[in-house]
Length: 281
Image 1: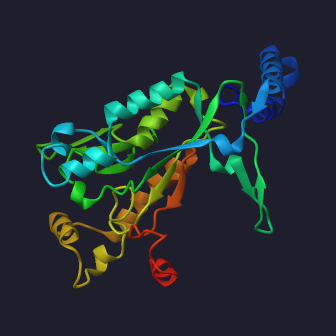
Image 2: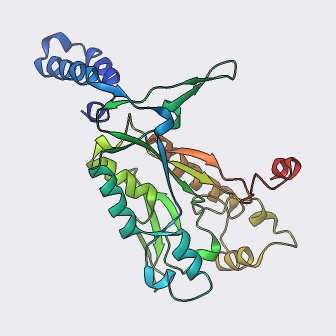
């Protein structure tokens, strides 16, 4: 039923026909027939017209993000609140937008060349690519009303941690990844064949809220003050534990249809830095 809702009719039929009692099960036969009818009604969407919608880390607590300090202006310019994000996604869904993956738009052949893909959707549906930059929960954002990391909960779902004023940790859906996961759970037809979004990571503060960069362990003389402060506050820090935690979250995200991209380790402007610097980064 999920495959049917996500326009993945061939895989739905394949799954149904793999059941030993397929030809004796009226429900299976009916769903397979329904898939064939739906597949016949699909139209190809022009690849060149597929748009890209991008977000930074979402603001959970506006009173902290927009408190008038030196970061408030930047947050106001480039960040989105959870409330704004939810309204945007709901509006897009209501207008017929559907998440798609670049891997369905184009494929890489064995010889390295590219082949054009096809996005086949019901008439009126509008495919788009979703992405989010950073998702590293930088130190400078601590205390400014943002989530602090992504985790995998006891049900295997990706969620966020958030540090409350009293230092306690709340777990919930406070950023794009878990919010989209929950939205697709309720509206599977918002996703084309299970696609979610792309997360473009930097690395200098680690990834996904985990302090995975080697500098946290080696502590070079030029280690920046934010890292020193964080390490002083976390005397039980262990690099391998952090990397294991990040890997667990990354795998859970991949299993849910998320893709990863490089935003460069040090947030480099690729159009301005030298090739040598980019390679080193």
